[in-house]
Image (cartoon, rainbow over all chains, first blue to last red):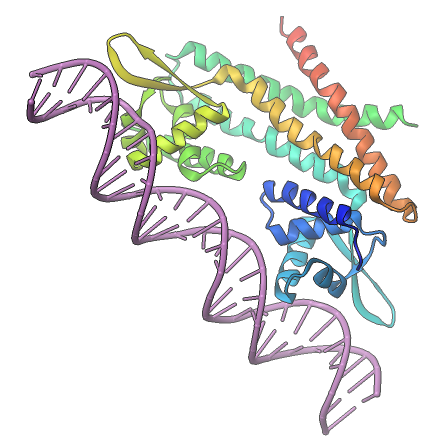
Length: 153
Length: 153
DNA sequence: CTTTTGGTTCAAAATATACAGAACTAAAAT
DNA sequence: ATTTTAGTTCTGTATATTTTGAACCAAAAG
């Protein structure tokens, strides 16, 4: 696939973004490619060739992306190839997961608070405050999504 | 420092949480220790001995934690030691930073949208929708914190 | 002025991760 | 029946990360 320099650069930037989320570079670049590719469904070999990665790396990365959620594939009768595509519609879920990662720290903080002596009042009240806000977020974030959905009808 | 098995386990769990955020294991464990330690200020050697890490690893990790924000140290006149402690009060900032990481993806998505042909209508409208919600979040999240602050007065 | 304390810095070892290349497989095409 | 396609899986290697240990340093203590 022919890509402009600009798109290649975007792929790298998106790749780095996903690397920072703990993804391997190749998988991050695949995400990048899927975002910028004009056709939304790409074959194994298109991905491999465009990104210059080996078959094995392509295979491993695609399967990882499928397992962890952001990618799926579709097939067509009489065509053995898989057509890989972003589950773009999935952004609600992936966002929710990222927020949950943040909010889940709450349970560790609660364990901490239970395990701590209550000598360090200042510290403990800071902890309580933090836990409290995470609790609030846990409740309010889903409402925020609903409010947004409402607002755009 | 003598720690119960339970606290040791908590340190590891907190360590893993921070590892997932891209921190090195030793630094993550230091965070864990600082959360569970009864005394909120710990010396270099207390940290080193309790966690069984080398001086160099301790030094590097502590400096990293200081640079990136979550830790600070205080000193006392006539005492050469530094007393390292969590900037617990800092949770607002660190939360804000984590939310910004999520929201900043918006700028990449905007670049993507500009670079894309408008053939893939479905895909593009999904992108637009996502960008839109990130925009909404960017505006609403700070308000959520304010609302929470109000509610607890 | 020598030793101790509270670290820092550097080189090297240990470990973990990511990737390539080759061998393999099952289904389809020739 | 052989070849091609569309991958998968299994080493091995390259690379990056993390940690240690040892040397070093400046300030304070003896």
